[in-house]
Image (cartoon, rainbow, N blue to C red):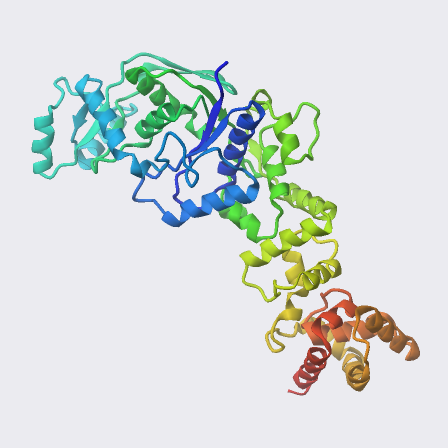
Length: 486
């Protein structure tokens, strides 16, 4: 049996979209399960939209997800280079081969001329199809056109018969001859189009299964015709269903982030995101929803990928992440937290594992790591960096003739004299203080919380004061009382 070889071939025009991440995940899983190889190629022939920083970002995001490749960019292999921008000579040879055999030809209509032809077709109620000239332009004609300042492209001469795509997911899809036209394979700047470069590279790199998004399904007839023109063997095809939002619209930024890096910076664990992405359009035979990456490989079957569009349920992803964080051991929780902190501009120092473990313990029940910063980040910021929430001040400090402020004034000297500055000791001290004055815990802890953080949200009051330290606690109480008198 032929060894399977899959690939992920992103265009670096931006960050890695979750749809691209799912495509990479499925290709990787197929190769791993069937003992094959997984290739990463960068398709950067669209120079107008190319973003060089996106190449590094895509690599970084895939590695963060745990998706590693056997061949391709950064690690090399026998079929490089693995950037299409470094393979121009290869494409030009193949384009010339098609020109020499009459399977492609030069064309040099201006955009204005093509627009006129398109409008003429529309006026007749017809779809526009490029009409091949009776006499194909020669190389001399093309050179003359270039000298005259016209854009010269190369078009593939479609044979004019129906093309059937045999797809592992969508079964047979036939594109009739009257829905095809002579498409461009080389642009005026000499660069190949996606269709030409993609077909040539998949063949030369030994790809046996082309697994990609459904949006490419109705482009595949072009690839089949090009392969036949080059006398290449046909790979298997599998087109994955589209990913939509919960309203059934194409997934976009209108209702939240859609890039892998955004979820990383938002405080999600990669294993939670991978688990969620795996279920977008696929279900395991046993119906389970939670599995490790290794278990996913064992379970994955391309035959169980659905034809219907997947829905990107952000609430479900958040629930997954909450469960994964709750199940993570201390070591995994710490590693993920340090990664989150490194990705964000935030005040919590990353150089003390002991401190970070304490912060995490004080913020149990988190849904994402962002919850930790929202709850405890202010404790590590400058003392004058936070504002006092007006509602919290009114409810906790000013209410009942400033009873909360009175508690702070009374506590100042007592906290200054308190020697055992640990969470347990501070918690006991505050409880004792409240019982002595017949005040509930909230009547003491909340004024301290608002004074030291500006809001009513922070870790337990003992943890809050311990992490702040005695000097900063007293300084913040002073600031709060000054705010009252301002």
